[in-house]
Amino acid sequence: MGLGRFEQNSYIGLVIHLVIALERIRAGEPCREAMNGLPEMEDSRQEARQLISLLEAEFGLEFPDPEVDAVALHLRGSKLNSAGNHPDAHQEEILELARCFIEGFPGEQAALLGTDGQFIQGLVSHLEPTVIRLRNGLPIYNPLLKTLREQYPDLFERTRQAAGAMERRLGMRLSDEEIGFLTMHAGACFERAGQQHGRRVKAAVVCASGIGVSALLCARLEKTFGAQMDLEALSAREAVSRQDVELFLTTFDVQGLPTRTLKVSPLLPAADLRQIQTELAGLQAKPARGGVQAENLEDLLVQVEETARAVRMLQTGIVRIPTGTVYDPAVLIHEAAQSLQGDAEILEQDLWRRELLGAVMAPEEGFALFHARSRGTDRIQAAVLLPAGARYDNGLRGVLVTVLPADHTKSMQQLLARINRQMSQDAGFRLALLAGPADTAREATDRLLAEFLQQATS
Image (cartoon, rainbow, N blue to C red; front, side, top):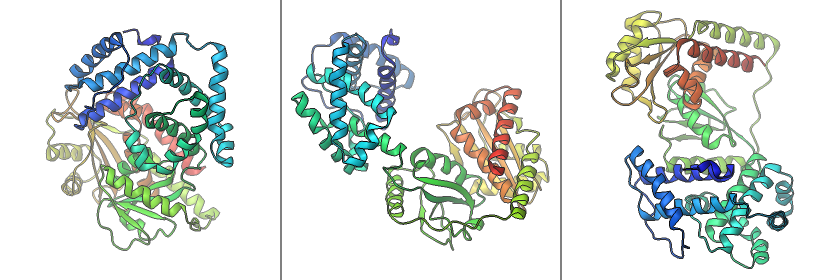
């Protein structure tokens, strides 16, 4: 379709728009309101229909006409943005508009925006097609407008006020959709500088062992709140003595935790995310707790030795276990236990007992997790169960199995938690384990172990 003719920003913007539209339609919330005042752009509509027909066939979804118009508008704007309609003289106007917008913020924030090269570059790239849209009467659709208004109301209104000077210079008013995009640019700058949310909160996710649900939940939380909190995974037994943690997050009831605890779903629905954000805002308004005392040399040496011992236990790699294509947890756990080191019967019992408490799956990432703390082994172990075909009958590409000995060290727990989190967060690591050849999987595991050892002893 010649999408390569677009500038990079326009191309990435189109991809993001399509991703959001797909998620919106999958959730049963497509845009159905007709867009009024659209210019003549039948050529862009034809291109949009061609592109959407591919998406409909690929994902089995139906795009209503307003969604087609939204994509057509994006294509139309991208063409104008890349058609050489921005002579150098026009750049001066764009830079002046950017200056007006920055100076519309309070002094400290204006200084921050004006010295952030990434923000200025992004703002100028955004303002060029914005001016063209405004002067040609092209509307714009912002799928994140409702979310921005709800989650960042103060920043949204601050941005609207700052945009006033631009509106006066252009002689026209910016729509809420345009204000929303400007809010995202400014918010990203404040986020990078730590201005949006203040200090980082010491938080911990708690589960029975500290290597299973907590590790995957940490990965999901870091995607959303990575700039606001320092996270670690803890077992319930460890958590009760951690006076330095300001906020505990758990998926089950835990008694005896020393401070505020939020119970959340492993899938982190919107209600849980709002609850966490509210709690973080309250904690960030307070001074940080005093940290734990510095370790002495003897404690540090013990930590280094325990870390090295944990790494050596997995130095031979993560075991790859071929299986059938039927996803039957009882059968798969039996096969895993037979391939692990230790008492197979006890390992199977402990893995199955944990599975009965609730399956741990990451369907979007394509894998499930079997994990347990077991008296059937004296070493940490990790394995991947791989179906004979490319996938199990439920669509998953594999199962990660991690086992923590009952008598384990903190380093052992942290290493297994690191593997579980890496499986969820790092697509390259996940692909190497689930679909790559043995050499690639081994290299990926060695890199993880080396990084863990270096970080733990630095």
